[in-house]
Image (tube, rainbow, N blue to C red; front, side):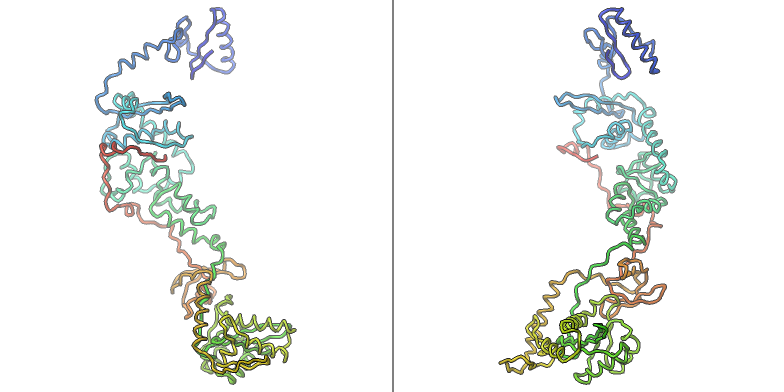
Length: 575
């Protein structure tokens, strides 16, 4: 028994054997509910089967007559296609072919548009859906079957292409996911779809689409660009929300969106939505630390930094001279502003009053302390809250003094004072000690020394410090963050939780150091370092400009003539 599609051929050595085989086949088909057409049943020594007369395998005369009587092609009146696959031996195998008469609108198409129209027939698309392949242009004279079919089409336009497109429309409308788009089509979208279906030129009020009109097509009520849905204006906010369901980052969401959809402001809309999502913003990592901003001084006690630290139940205050790095320290009787100021005044009476004093925002250095500085003619500068690095000079002084105290048992006694003197006289990486720079001479300690010079090389010290600062800047990690402006909306980081969940605010003041800002929030005004402030994106995905205003090109390039296209050796592209 042989079977091709729904045709079956039974053969036997004699008539009785043939009847027995036929009875078996009928019984099986009866059990499976398979029926036969009596009109197609033929019994004999010569029967037609699969285009041949089975006996000596001669071609069916009816098929031969259809080819021999095929009229000579004269002009292009229809659209034809042929899907051919070559075997390993090189022998061609016809998979599928078809043709139809051109509609009045299709007769106005350029040749290249007609060729691509054949590729997009739904029946052919269904057969090719499971494959990935490359389409290559070849001269029409080599497409014998398709060329012949196009000049003598079998079906009219209502029986072929329109039927296939109607099938596309039915598939599109019945897909529940696509109803989000189909139910939000506006009038401009409908006008564009009508223009694409008509196949003529663009109406004057849609001239803004000239730049992409040739890349668009209509399936049912929907417009596509390649395999991407062209989303109407009212449906975009919904699509944006669906794209952000996974709460992925900007790049991943943009990649997903560009694979499925197209509209003029797609990337910006995705970027704004992700950047304004509270859950995504709260989970963002901390911003990279900025390079240390070098601060200098021209002479001793011009600028000082002050901070407190605790050790073994005692509180100490440390003051460091910015010019020399010379540290002062003392144990405090209490942590009040008065106790701190009293100790500082003892030092000021000894070495002079500074021009500026920098502290953190501890309770000792708030309102009353600022007033005392004003009375003393000192400019009080505070570091950014939750950012100790902005008062790095005091932090480094505290670290050195506290480490030395720990090594000596934590007692502020003569032993510690002697060790602190030697520490002050020890040269730093620039070759100068804090004591040398602060006193402008070599300070005599308990170490025996043959050095008796008393003149301090100020220029050498200045050059050494400048060179050291340059090296620090070059080797510093991180990069400066973009400055914020007054009125800019920002997200504020909750430093304790390391998340951006503190809330949002508006910049109301940029402080002189350039890295600290005052931010107005619903809970009041807060001061924060730039590292703890992230620019907030204002959501703009709810409204969009009309499509036609964004697609008008300066000048649309003309379609090349067929003679020009034929000169190309080979054109390949991914489908």
